[in-house]
Length: 354
Length: 272
Image (cartoon, rainbow over all chains, first blue to last red; front, side, top):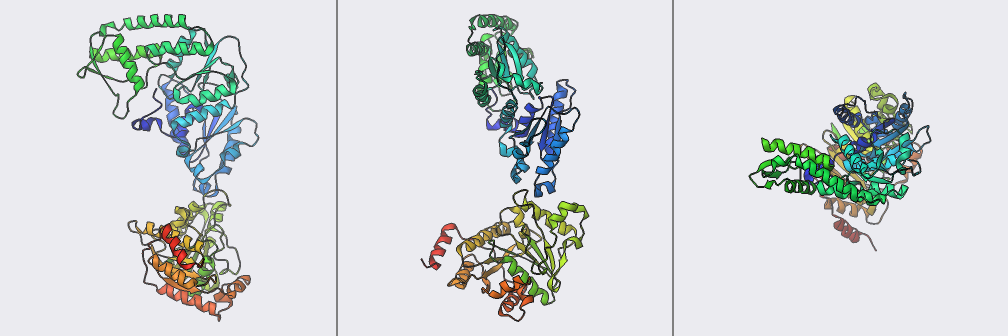
C-alpha cells in the first residue's frame, strides 16, 4: 500500500494533519467541523473537499467553520473565538448532531487549550480532534486521529444477526473510493458478509452507534493498524489490516476475513480464482508482448506492493518484462481487488496496442 | 535620534535604571521616549508618579488598532519624558512576543517613535523573536546589559549577548552592544567581576550603580531617584550614566561565553 511513503512521496502523504482529519470528519454528514485557526486553513481545505465532492457528482458543501483568528487573537489567546464559533455552529439550522474541533499550527504554538474549551457540557457532542497542523504530525496522523475521535461517539458494541464488516479508513480523497468499497462488498459477499458501516463515509452521527456491532473490521491499509487495535480493544472486533491487492492477495484477503469471522473461506476462494481466470481470459490478446514497468512519476518512490502486483499479472498473462518493452507505469495507488486489476489491465492494453 | 535598549535578568533593576536614565536625560533638555516592553507594564510607573498608564495592547484589545491615536498610548511623565507601555495578554494565554511586534508596528504607524533618545526597557529574557524586536533593524542600535555580580544574572546577560551576536550577523543589522551596566547587589568584588565579564564578551563596564536605600525610598514615594532626591549621590550616578550612554560612541559586537567558559569564570570569582 502507499501509506508508508518514501521521502519522495512526502508532498502527497506527509501533508497537513488538518487535511487528513477533515477527509474523514466531513463524511459525518450531520456534523460541523470547526477549524480553530486563521481563515486560510479552512479555505484551503474547503476548496479541496468541495472540488473532491464535485468530482464525485456530490453537490454538497463541506460543513466547515473557521474561528477566523487574526493577530489580536494570537496575542491575547484564541479560546474566546473558539467559544463563539462553537456557539455559532450550535445555532445553525439544521443544528449539527455533532461538532468536531480541529486545531491548527498557530493555536498549538500559542498554547490554546482546545480540549478544555470543547469539554464544557453542551447540547451535542463537541469533540476536540488532535490535529495541530505540523505540530500534530502529518496527513496520515490526521486520518488516524480523526477515526479515533469519531469512534468516541460510538455506543457500546451490540452484536447484530448475521455476519457483517466495517470498512475502516477509506481514502475519501481517492478517485475510486466507491468502486473500491463496491469491490470489497462483492468479495465479502462470497462469504455471506454484508457491510455494516463505512467508517467514515456518508454517515450520520446516529449511524455511529453501529460501529461496535460488526463481525470484522477491514482496514483500508496497514498504516491504520493502531485504529484497528483500538477498535478491537473497545468492541472486541477483530480486524483484517488492508484492502486486498493482486490476484493471490485478493484470495488471501478472503482467507483472512474468513479466519477473522470463524468461517471456512475455501469455497469463496475457489469461486474467486475462477472469476479471476475468467477476467484474465479477456486480456489474453496481450500475451507475448514486451513491457517495461516504470515508476508512474519521478516524484513517486518505489512501491513494493505495486511491483508485486505488476509482476504477478505479467506472469499470469505471459507478458515479457524487458528494458525496451512498452512503458507501463506502476499503478498508483495500488489497485484494489480483482476489479481494480481489471481496470489496471485495460490501461495496459491501451498502452500495448499503442 | 539615539535608540537604546536595556536588557537583563528579571528583577535586576532594569526598569529602575531605565526610568532614572530617562529622567536624567530629560533633565538635560532632551526629548525622551521610554517604552516598556514587558507584560508587567511597570517600566514607566515611577516616571508617571505611580500611575498605571493604559497599555498599547489593552487599547488594541478594547478598541481595535484602527481606532488608536498617539495621545491614547503616549503619556508625559517627569520632566516631559514620553512614556509608553506595550503590555501583554493575560498571564498564561496568547503570545506576548507577538504583542510586542504588534505594539512596534502600531507605534511606527502612529509616528510615535521619535525624539532625541528612545529607551526600550525589555522583559528579562529574550524568550522569543518578539522580545528581540527592539534589537531589529530600525530600532535600538545600542543594547545595554544590566546585571549584578550574581551568577544567574551574568548568565542571563550572556544569553542576551548571544541574541545580539546572532542578530548583528544579519544583513543591514545595526544592533550592537553598547556596554554593561552593573546594578550592584553589594557582593564582594562585584564591580571587578562584572567588569571582567564585560571584557570577556568584548564589551566594557560603562557604569557601576551602587546599591542605595535612596532607590527604595524614592520608589515608595512613586518617583525616580533623580526626581525625589536630586541632590543625592545616587542621582549623580544616574546622571553620569545618562551622559555616558548619550555620548557613547564605542560599541561592539559581543563574543558570548560558552557554558564551560562561563563556569570557569564563575570559579575564578566566587569564593568557595
